[in-house]
Image 1 (cartoon, helix red, strand yellow):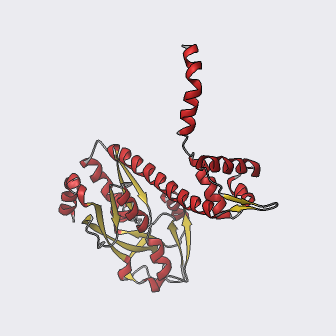
Image 2 (cartoon, rainbow, N blue to C red; image 1 turned 30 degrees about the horizontal axis):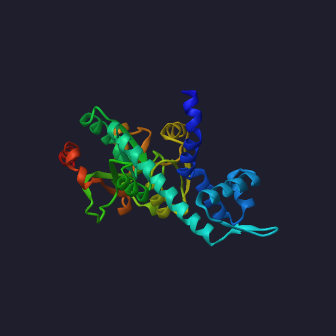
Image 3 (cartoon, rainbow, N blue to C red; image 1 turned 90 degrees about the vertical axis):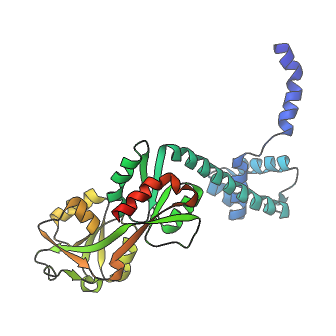
Length: 303
C-alpha cells in the first residue's frame, strides 16, 4: 500500500492543485485592501504583518492566474483586475454569510420558536401561551429594530415577529395581538398624583427612571419629552432595586401592571397622548400561517 501511494502521490498532488479552491480568508483580505487603499493600512486593520498580507495576495494572484496589483518601486496598489476581484469577493462573502444564516435558521427552527419583537411588553404576557401550544419547542425572544425584524423573518431567522403597525406586504400573514398603554408612576405626594391621566408635556422636564431595554418606547418618550433626563437601568432587576430606594418617577404599562401588580406607595397615571398607546401585530410568512394556526386562533380568542 505504501509503494502504491508513493507511485500515485504526484498525480494526486496535481489533481489537488488543479482543483484548489480560494480560501475565504484570501477574499476577506482582498476586500480589506480595497477598503483601506493600501497594503499597510489593510494589514493594520486585519492585525497582520505586511509581508504576510503580501504573500496572501501573491497566492491569490497565482490561484486566479492574473495580476491584481500594479507594483512600482515604492508603491503597490490594486489594478483594474484587482478592483473587480475585490468587488466580486464582497459579493461572494455576503452570499456565504447568507447561506450560513439560512442553514442555522433552519436548524434552529426545528427545535426553537424564534420570535423577534419591537417591544418586550407583549411577549411577557404571551410567552406562556405560546409555550403551552408548542411544548416541544424552546421559545426564544429577541428585541430588535423593525428593519432587523422584517429582514430576519424573510431570511428565516425568526418564525414570527411582533410589530406595532400593519405592513403592506402580502408575503406575510398578520394577526392582531393586543395593545399596550404607557403610564407614569409617581410618588403619592407628586404634583400630578391625584390625576387619572396626563400628557407627556405635563411631565416634560422631569427626571425619570427607565429600563434600558424597552424597544421603541425609548424613542417615543425621548421625542415627546425632550427636556427630560432618563436614568437608564440595566435590566428590570436593577430598575426595581433603584425604584425601592428612590422617589423618582418611572414608566409602567398596563401589561406590566397586570403581571406584577401595582406599587401601593405610588400613583399610576395613564398617558393621554396617542403615541402612548400601541397596537401590536404578529407576523409570520404567509406560507407558514397554517403551521401556526393554533397560535393565531388563540390570539383571535384573546383579542
